[in-house]
Image (cartoon, rainbow, N blue to C red; front, side, top):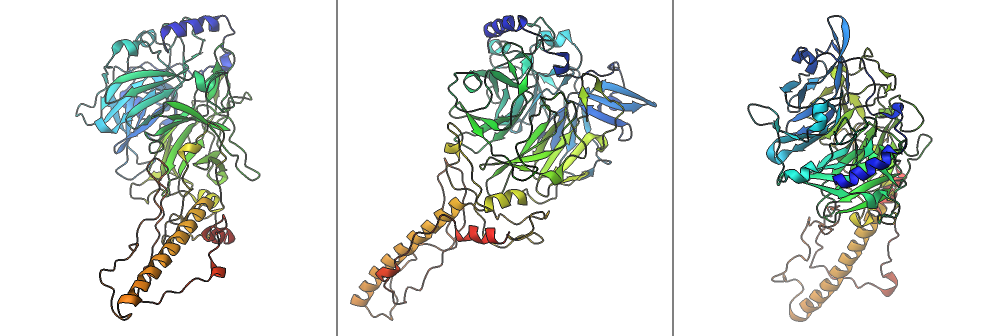
Length: 603
């Protein structure tokens, strides 16, 4: 997005209605304490003194989680106080801890602005963190006039933030400093979708209450230090070339972004939720979760994909939400599970945090309601990320709106850190690095075992998921886990027991082809044996047609790599071959595999 476009849009917005006070993105709060307060108390208050953390960002890099931004409510010398968070916190992942024993390392910054939910990108190849944008906690003219982003080398002994240098300073200067974007990292590039700019984030805007949408996908290549900005008009505008999506002429803010690194030729980025601002500055509307947006990195194209509602009395599609969080994990059979939780409704006038927990499984694009895993208390203005089987949720308040947020409402999570086991679907007050790897929870496995498949829409993601659905890995269940017919409500997991109807058809067809090929080859070989040598003699130079334990089938690398091990046993080559009678020619198997029938019948 260039300045010329933004200025034109600003003129339109200035002629329209201002955003209502109740729709502002930063709730009112008691006055902040001066920045000279003791840094240890400001960054990480003692567990007994901590009350709440509001509006942080979180990411993982190496053996740490890094938390930055927002404000802290704490009890200090018998009084409740609110301060800006003036340090970056590092939470260890290579050692076990409980919420009471957790000690977060503080990294002082000095030069960084105090902002809510800044873009926080992690670059594992260079052990670096990058910080950019965000809403200032309080109006800061210096921040609004400064177009900068920052870098932290986490392996540097000094552990200090510095101003980063783009490869092309002019191109970078053409970007507006954003707030409330959906951001993530995918295969060495940082992505930031949408968001808005105000006079508090960028001095090139005059009116403080004009939240002007930024209709672009901003990228930053960590290796080349090159910034780009691609238009998203085709995906969000009436008349755009991208088919699908339930909302037009509104541009996203306050949503979530996630990376599927091995889908497509170079990965895809997924965007979901939040709210949409129209170009004329009218009241924002929900970005419904009936559709999710994908960006194909290799093809540089957007795709809208519809989702399927959850079944049952508590089913449906998650209600619209903003300022919540989403995290992703990849199952052992290749599915992705997207966990969505927290936030508060865009519509309806409620400022109460949402406590419901949902999972969207991909490639089925099916919503599943995890009613037994709800948050202990609704939570908004929060942030989360995942590693292994753990989802980490940091910060948030139960209610924050036009009237502010209750600085005396103590967080039920000590130090404001929640740990969720995405496999067992349980909230915990501790973390250990010595836990089993993540696998899809049973509720997801059951859906695929029951023949669950995606409903594809025109222009959606079907071309990226053209291979069969996940198939089971042979062998019995893990010790202590349930079998295929186990109770779906159990918290223990079987080992890779998902299967789809398409997999059954493919495997059955391959078995039939293999058997027919063996019969034909064996028949010809034995005819030659009877004509030229004694039937009791060994056949010289004989080799099995298909080695035992060969991987079968294997789909091409540009499709989803769902593979199944099939153990093939070589038949006795000295046995007299039996001629198949015409009336016993093999029939084509039905669309449902025997494995699927068995799994279904034991539920």
